Length: 156
Image 1 (cartoon, rainbow, N blue to C red):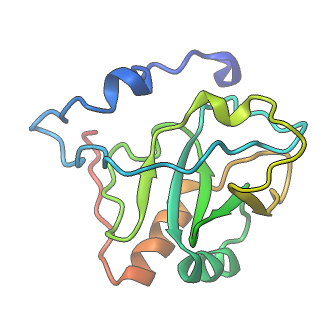
Image 2 (image 1 turned 120 degrees about the horizontal axis):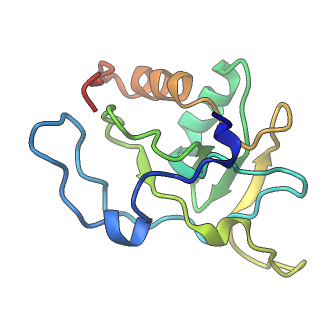
């Protein structure tokens, strides 16, 4: 099966954002936190797996970036760093306190005016042709920096 052209089986962000998790899973409900203003992926990059974002503090972001073997697009906005990850990177894991997981907004990939006086800026371009940071190494580094033991469920 060609995953690049497979429709995302998850409900849209508008319908799943406020729906509680089933009680038999270990995944926490999505956090109701503000996402970044629209993020624009660099020209030529495609987010065929959908896209969500994980935010960290700038301090943790710099340390995570230094510890990753490869990173995708990373944006900075108001003291937060936003890491582009494939859709569903929150399934089965509990992201540590201090990070925020935000369900992707299709507007991230829409063309934007050339001049943007404020808003997120790209602080790291991808180390390849994919906008994604691998969520597992990002998760483990975020847990390490926040002093939280990683926790995931194979049933999710």
